[in-house]
Image 1 (cartoon, protein in one colour):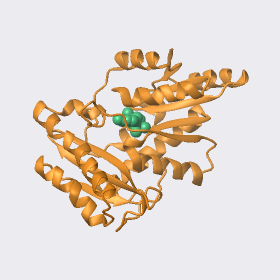
Image 2 (image 1 turned 45 degrees about the horizontal axis):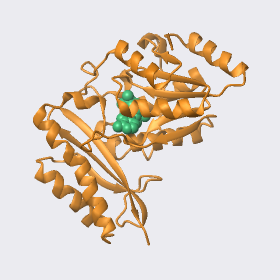
Image 3 (image 1 turned 90 degrees about the vertical axis):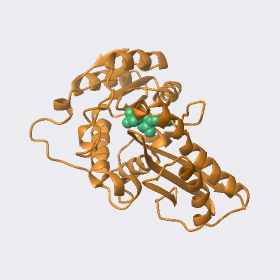
Length: 283
Ligand code: AMP
């Protein structure tokens, strides 16, 4: 695996692979890698000739009161894990390579960015995500890019921007990877002390409870959400949001018919965690 830091170096590597007829997969990350990230690299490895993992803690997607300064960073460890999972190129640009002096462009997607994390973290969050991902697509020009369903709204935002801006890349969404006790893996789980780490398992258990309610025949959104909320309350968690929305366009649902996205965000101890589940009502 090679570590490169400039757009011209990553382009040269991709052009080299392309000239031999190779196809290129991109895995965008902010580092602090865990098995969730590695599952994306492995998926990319299985389907591409060249696998590029980007490592960039994107300042523009953090709000002023968020954890940009504290965000865990360990490039040497990340490089070792990325190589082990099959990455060929680690693209780790400095901030000035991505945002040169005078940078003044932003990609804004309306509608689907205005709910859930967009409503709670502020519109700037998804502007930052959309802008950096668009830039990565132009820098690397991958055939396919791999994202985690853990960030379900982010996947929808990226699919929308790719469609709206005619970006020639296939978006692959990979399943949520969880700890043995069900907690969704996240770089932010390191902020949890032992007591909060234990309580954090309630997020996945709340999604389980909602899924069980649907399996038992419940179709009312209010009742399904209440089943999940009861589990959170028992763990002393007051969610930032706990909402049932269409997995296609995030419109709010009042019934589960077909597929529904149940999405949750909550502060647990020192971490802000998100999780989600696609609930399926079989007729
Ligand atoms: P991040 O470094 O947090 O920006 O995440 C990089 C990519 O890894 C994003 O596409 C995330 O959705 C994905 N990811 C993060 N956690 C998980 C997880 N537990 N399972 C699957 N994918 C994940």
